[in-house]
Image 1 (cartoon, rainbow, N blue to C red):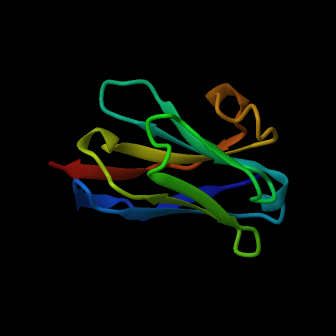
Image 2 (cartoon, rainbow, N blue to C red; image 1 turned 90 degrees about the vertical axis):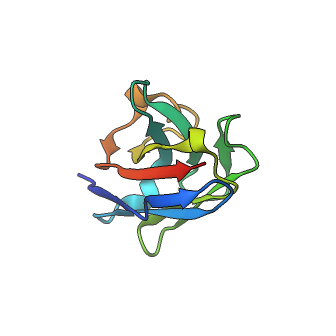
Length: 124
């Protein structure tokens, strides 16, 4: 069992930056690929990016590529989402998720555990 807790959300102006954290419980954190998703009001949850179990590989949705960076610290059981050059359309609740497959984690049904989410609001 893995419990995930996101933090770091808030209100930021367009062009600004935020770093989200996702802290995991348990001793098996490094056994999971980690993903970030987001859900805006009235929209479906969408994939943002993922990081491999070791942290050596990442991939991102086209909408955030070049602006967002995912990293992880397995010693601290934490994954991060650095968000730069934020846009109003990035406003959403952001969720971290854990899954067994790095290549499949971009699909929500392929995840095993979810955090409760953290709100990010970008003002124009």
